[in-house]
Structures are given as structure tokens and as C-alpha cells.
Amino acid sequence: MIRHAMLLPSIAALALTMPAAAQDAGPPAATPVVQTDAGSVQGLEQDGVDAFLGVRYAAPPLGDLRFMPPAKPEAWEGVADATGYGAPCMQLYSASGPTESEMTRRIQAIFPTSTEAKMDNEDCLFLNVWTPAAGGGGKRPVMVWFHGGGYAYGSGNWPAYNGRNLAEKGDVVVVTVNHRLNAFGYLNLAEQFGEDFAASGNVGNLDLVRSLKWVRDNIAAFGGDPDNVTIMGESGGGSKVSHLMAMPAADGLFDKAVIQSGPGVFSGKPAEAADYAARILDAAGVETLEDLKNVRSDEIVEAVRKATPSGAMGSGPQFGPIADGTIIPRDPFLPTAPEQSRDIPVLIGYNKDEMTLFVAAQPWFGRLTEGTLSAMTAGMGEQAVAAVEAYRARYPDYSPTHLAAIAMGTRFVRGTYLLADQQSRTASAPVYVYRLTWETPIGGGMLRTPHTLDIPLMFDNAKESAALVGTGEDVQTMADMMSDAWIAFAKTGTPSSELLPEWKAYTPTSRNVMELNVEPQLVDDPEKDIRELPSEL
Image (cartoon, rainbow, N blue to C red; front, top):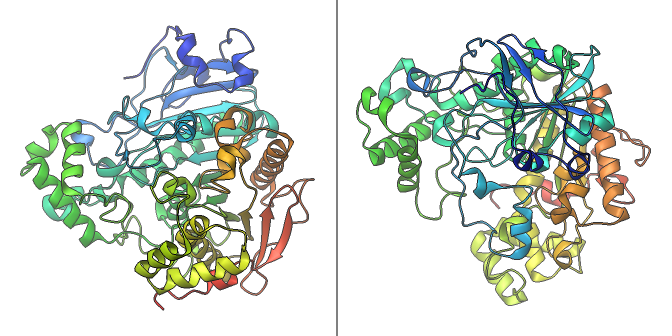
């Protein structure tokens, strides 16, 4: 429901949405009133940056719009309250992740996955805007962020994604987006309910397209340039960016793309998605269109859990976009990169030790011996054995635990280089590749360079994300370096910083990779042995 007219936010709740510097600045002032194509909105300043939170970009996907492509929101009268975040989509967050230690509970403060499930809703099509000067003209670069959490959970509201610092530092407009997830965004109902539901397996990605159309039509009123839009995302968000590059409906809606630890090379297959959907509907007791319309959202979530094999949230059936031949014509980067994005500069990369974040809560973490490492990797196949030996030669100081963890992350490495190779072979625009090697000191350094470490650095939110990145001069150096590069890329299509050497483009014959560390360096094909591992040895 749109909130109208009166601006009476809870200051305590508002503080949770602000960086620390803004929380110390006293009571926030109201932003200018901004007119969008559906009505006026007004937010609150965050330490001099105008923040508009929970702005509706599409009609509520309820009733007859459930499982349907997003529609434009109905116009409203008065001034809509944009002082607080809109609801995230219904969450499928699994509590089996690393949530039990004190350290990981602290990380939940900036990636509040389990908390999102307490406030989720099907009515979730909202976005957030941070701008240095709303309504004041100007044509600032626009940086649109699509959240992680795969296609199962997450939102653009997470504190790590707060765009205030990036907007101020770069004089840019930052947008973060909520959209339909899991069964609400990717349930392929076409086989069971016919042509009217042909888009149902991809409506979550169509929400992203709708958000970009909102940016095109409205961002100028917030001081942004609709002709200079960079889309960005990490993990599942990186996959979302990859797929948008291959969606005809998204063609022309963005100018640059950033893919962080989430190369989306493949799409799901319609038949497999339809089979998964049939099992979910069966578990929910849905047989007719009337049932589909009336089943409660919490019953759908519970049906997903029943229909998904135990422990398979990361390895069994998965939600995500499907190559249906129309909305997504084929796998995004196979057999070639998408022709429609040949003129899109791409910044893509990954973190050295992606998997430590996921396995740190496992009982074996920190306890593996050489013998148990050998047994574990043998059970995972010859590719895992080869990866462990390659990393052992590269990192002789790594413990068996860290060798196991880094070897589990080869899909990030190989997917990044596969996408970069495919794009650079045919694109007229450059591809830039990075590898984050700086290690976080938290937990005695146990995580090294984990998944998500890049986010607070490129958002310039290091101080607010000390639970993940720690404190000290090196942390701020990394945040300065990476936020500089991301802002420069959004402005010019080339990542650069005074803290970096010249960042040369990546090609299949000159695989330049920027290793991001306190002493960064441009290196040639730093993980060639991992990149060349065959899928099946």
C-alpha cells in the first residue's frame, strides 16, 4: 500500500537505514518533493544526501497479477511517503548457513537475511534512490544495484547496500531494487496452466526490466542521467546482470554492466522448471486456477520446502530465470555472448576465497588434516583433486581447511573467465576483470577473502561494515580504491583510481586481471590452471 501525505517516520527505525555518519548528524530534514510518472514522493536527507526509500516502481503483483509480468503502478494523489524501505519479497532463506557463531551474527547486521523473512511480502516491487541533489537538475551517472541471495532471498534494503556514501563520493545517483524471488518470481506454470502463464518462469527478471524502465522515465527528476546507467550486482545479483545483458526487453535500458562473484553463463531449462513447479503445486494442494489465485503466500513458501529435497537448497532444484526462447532466448553467454550487449563495457571479477563464508560454520572448518582433505576431495571428483593441488602449489601456507574451501570456489573463477572470454571475443566495448585478494582481518583472518567482501568496499561502506571488513588504514585504502574504480567505470566505462596502476582491458589473448589489494597489480591470467580445468576430467 502506498503511504501518502504525512511524513512521520520512526527515527529509531530510520537510523537502521543510515550509515553511521548520518546517524550522528541530528534529526534528518525532508527532501524536496519529486514528481514521478505515477505521483509525487518525498524522503529524508541522510547527512546531506537525499534518500527516497520504498518507492513503488510497479503495481502490487497480487490477485490477477500474481505470477504475471509487472505492470506500471497506478497513479496516486498527494505526496507518497518515501522515508522507509518497502517490503522485501517472500524469503526462502535457509538457516543452514553460517549463522551460529558470534562473528557471523555480527555479519547479519549488514546482510540481515533471517530478519528479512520477518517482514517479507508478495507486495515487494519497490526501489530506493540516493542522490546528492534531488530536483535540482544535473545529469549524474546512475548506478543501479541488484541484490544477492541467489534468486531465493535478499533485498535492496540491506545495510551493506546503502547508497548514501557512494552517491556523495562520486556525485552519482544510486538505486537499489527489490523484486519477486523464488516461487513468486520463477515458477514455470506454463505447462500446467497454459499460455496465459508463459512468462511466469521469468517474471522476477521482468521486474528488473520494469525497474530499469522506471529509471529511464523518472531518474532525471532525481538528478540522474537516463542515458548513463550502469547496472551492478553481486552473487545472484551478478547473475541477474548477466541475464539482463541477454534479455531483448532490457536492450537499451543500460549502458554498462558490473558482475561481481556471480557470472550468469547458463539459464535454467523450461522442462526442469516445470517439473519443479508441478511438485510445488502438488505440495501446496493447488489444482485449479482458483486454487492458484487463493493459496496463501506462506503456504507457497512451505510447499517449496516440502518439494525441495532435504539439504538441496544449494545443490538440488533451483529457482532462477529460464531460457524460454522468448523472454530469455538462450543461455546468456553460450554458445556466444549476446549480440545485443556487444557495445556494453563490462567490469567482472571474483574474490580469492569465495566459499569460506559458506563453510565457516561446518564442523570440519579449521579441523581438516591432510588425510581428511584427501578423502573429502576424492569424494568430490577428479576436478576437485586437481584444484587442491593447483592451489597447494600457489599457496603453500594454506591449511587443509583453506585448501578445501578455495577449491570449492572454482565455479566462480571458471565462470568469470568463461564470461569474460565470450564477451571479449565479440564485443566492441572493453571487458575489465578483477580478482580481490585482500584478506579481511576479522575472526583472526579465518575467512581470508570471502564471498561478499567486495560489497562494502565498492559501496564505500567500510566503516559501517566493520563486522565483515574490520578496521584500520588498509580497510579504508581498499574502500577508497574500489569505490574510486566503480565510480570511474560508471562515469566513463573505464575503472580507474589514483591508487591503482593502469587497468588494461581483458582479451582472450591478453588476459589482464587487476589483483585488488593494498598493493594492487595488473597480472596476466593469474589462475590459468584453474581456468583450464575441464568440466569432467
